[in-house]
Length: 257
Image 1 (cartoon, rainbow, N blue to C red):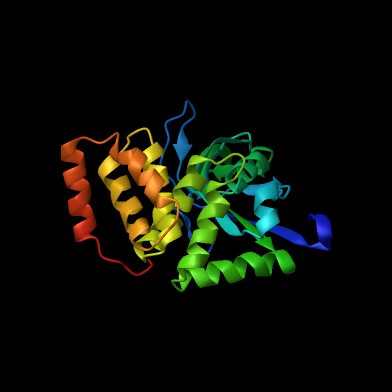
Image 2 (cartoon, rainbow, N blue to C red):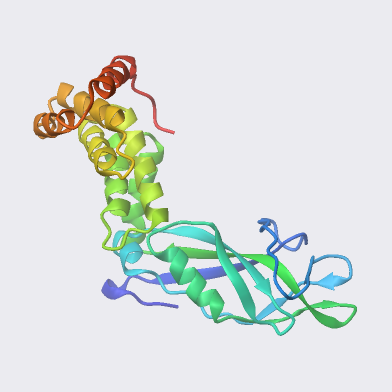
């Protein structure tokens, strides 16, 4: 049990999900990894491992600050000695919570799986549930609900939460760009401009796509678009410009998804 600043109560709950064994309602299948130790499947003569020491993970500062919640699913091999190894993320949730989940599960210890009464290594999936209560919970929950309902402004705000972190992980960037793309595709000028910024500065430099977003933002009167578009077109070839113009002509707003 963690007590974050502001007396907001934080609870993390851990659910053990065993691959190939119907022992919980939600089972997540993990991919098989090759290790020096033979890996058995739970079921039949193989009993599942049981956690005997499973301290709760901490919330990351960035997730707690905005009331971000989620369930991170990890793939884990529990050895015949009851120690976890080969821990990897199956379902990432970002905001530093995936790292916190791995850190916690790495310290776990299990009563190992048994086959014919002898300890064996098995592969399992572990769900680590990060859940907040109080004001912090309400802040993110309200924002997430609006975003899921198609509110472009809420989607843009969520995108910024993920993309403007001090340490933006690949998972955070992917989630942030998804929200940003949804907002831009709905026609929100600020989101369109930011999509142009991201693409123009990306190593792959898809200039025609960046041109499209900048142009759409300018068409809606977004004030920073003129300068950005002028700088971009100076770097584009005539062929790239033609492709960009065609993208602008063919663009249509799309609902959130």
